[in-house]
Image (cartoon, rainbow, N blue to C red; front, side, top):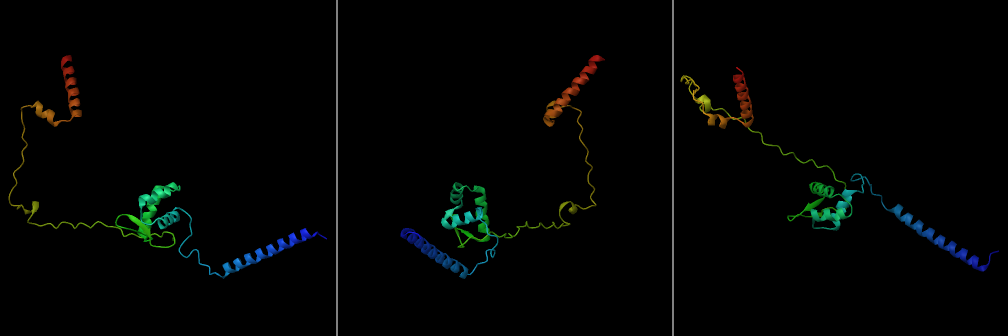
Length: 188
């Protein structure tokens, strides 16, 4: 038979265990009684940059994108990713942007970003110009003969005019051709 001290210690331990078990059972019963919300109701649950960005906007309302980018960068998130997510959240309507660039959430809880089909801006099609018979080359009557164009040939050689019209590469080729002509003349 155990001594009195050991018997009291074991009795206290058993009563504490019994009390703990009843408390745990009550908590479990409360959890079981609460309605279970479908976790996939709004999409896949994620714990990532999107959620962190949303939470930072919710916890720091009326900050600019740059300020939020700096806050999340200190927590280890990529600044470009945060900026992109803020833009996507604005498009989805999850957050709003004020005239001075401050942003705030319009939702209480994060929901995964859904793709928003942004209407494609199409360039207006240019209409084909309608040809008016009375304008342009068609307006010239066909009965009038056009004067033939005769090229003007000049027998005088103007070196300055020639050099003004050729490129440097053509000038180098011209010099080489002239040197070859002079060599052949010397050999003859």
